[in-house]
Length: 397
Image: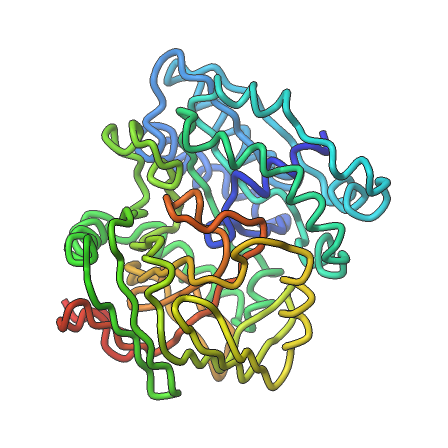
């Protein structure tokens, strides 16, 4: 079902999706799959009798999909499995005539209104091989057709649980030994989510209506912004009964591993300089990045390497693609930033800061566009109305 590629781009947000390669050793993890499935279905998603549930994933992760589907049935949910394929997804973006990329999946948008829970597993075995060299013009057409999904998600009842899994492919891409990467992943999945929720609630309260958030780093970042009336969202691995009633789709999302507080700020309030020593653009390194925010607009973008990728990635999109749109603080102590050696900056790592420009409509922001880009700020210090909550990349309470 090639329209699922468009739907996934709308449903599975960038900072909570993951690629997956399953080796023969993975199939020995069936017991672990079963235990995780129970937790996801009964706690994170809180599936109720009669709930309509979709379990989505690639053909390489069918055993986990089966475990989840079995638990959904035991909980009284009505489950459907949706299967993805690297070959089909790539064909959709490389071989389908452009005029067909623009077809809107209207029927599926209507169908999603009747879905209570979407459990998302990684859909692609090798995401870089599928998407890494796709022309941005074609990606933009596919994103535009998927806008119909984004437009209905806040009004829908759908709640989403996203599940990652450690793989050799991702470990290699992040330049981290697999044994280290795997242990870190499971430490993060099994972290103290009660403590994460407690810390998140404190930061959330401080951010609500905050007048001045100042972000600095030893590398040269020094900018500030306001939250205004924006909604502060917390991802602590569980969609609570209260969150399930929210009018914002992103409040109805949980991920494992997870742990972050994020928001769409007052877009025009951002002013100052941002310096990003290392990040990625379309799976390739982008280094020595520096730019300024002036009344929320990104200006004077420069990069030592990868700058052309940024320009090409943003060029096909219209609207407020270069306006400040996103701010997050990670909370999970099980995840670690690993650089020199390593090239790993997980957004949910405790004390990790990410910012973004472009679309933030699902967060309740005013930027509506298919274009967006996020930037990691490692070892940053964050002050909220004069109180330090993150110091040089570490939570201070």
